Image 1 (cartoon, rainbow, N blue to C red):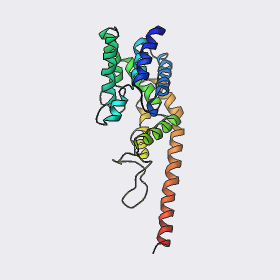
Image 2: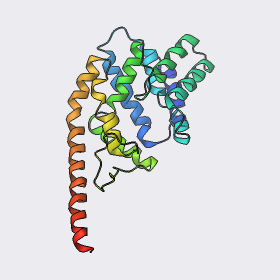
Image 3: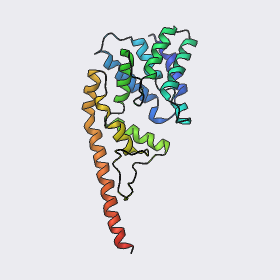
Length: 225
């Protein structure tokens, strides 16, 4: 991919980006990680991979405005239309669209091409470890969701089985379970290197808030008769 083509696609990505949890720096981390993984997986069409990485979150604005919308599906179609309009071949645009449509963790359509598998892995690595914790907390703040939910007895839920969205619920549903879901060997290795940082943070936060609620409730019962 030449510099002019890269700049064209990157500029379109910039025009589509919105929230700070899925900003251009997230895109760059995903791209850099994907290029590193690609060196261990052959063959890889780097032109498809680079475009897919740059454009993989361009549907986030639509999903933010309407949570019923899947940003992967919207983004894939937007990328396809943009690339075709800019004179790229329909086959190339379709390959990029497939990568984008299948990169989402909650999507039931798994990636098929090597480029799609690498994008999936690179994007999930940005939810692993410390950076994943930071991004999840940032996003929860943007959409106004809490750190945790309370059980009916007033104790803090660890998030397991919760239906109401929270940081703990997201950790139990996604962050804790993504480490066995990578397609490439290199991505799985990197994820395991990062895992302990996320585990330690979650466990520390849960211990702190759950202990406070228990001791605080006991003290309140003594103070308020």
